[in-house]
Image 1 (cartoon, rainbow, N blue to C red):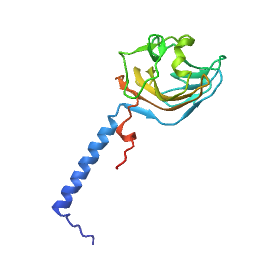
Image 2 (cartoon, rainbow, N blue to C red):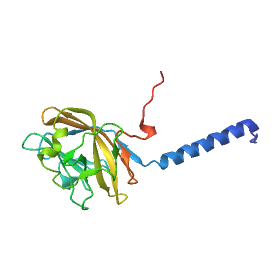
Image 3 (tube, helix red, strand yellow):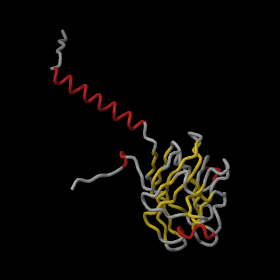
Image 4 (cartoon, rainbow, N blue to C red):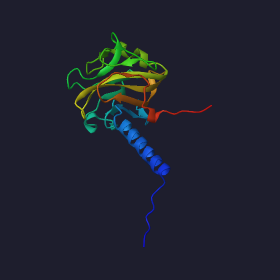
Length: 199
């Protein structure tokens, strides 16, 4: 015969509190709008470079092999780093810029609909890349792109390290975007991805 015993009131109350906290945490995580990828992506120093779909994380050396790609980072015949953007939907992609030069943003810089973006599919002329064809560490490229999963324009950042030789070697160390179409700040990551230390 199985005996059923009632838990003491204090234990039942504690379990109820733990359950409420668990539900609260679960709902907070499910409402998160910032999506990040911390997988380092090396940018090949050739004309194909790497195509990247920010939503799926897929990469490849040809746009046809990366459906929905959002940015192509590559090396030109001038041995320098360039960006190429998809042309459809119209005026949906580009990099944050001051006038006609891609910005190398610092942490905390805003990236959203109020900023200026170089929108043409060619990515601008050679002078547009001056900030990224030198050694940069810990700087951010602000991006605007079409999110095919939500059918909205999203804003995000790529944290790039570039070398002194025309921007090479070059690596995308991480990227994040807000999937609601809201502004994001360079370097912002969800709390769940942040690392803390206690001194």
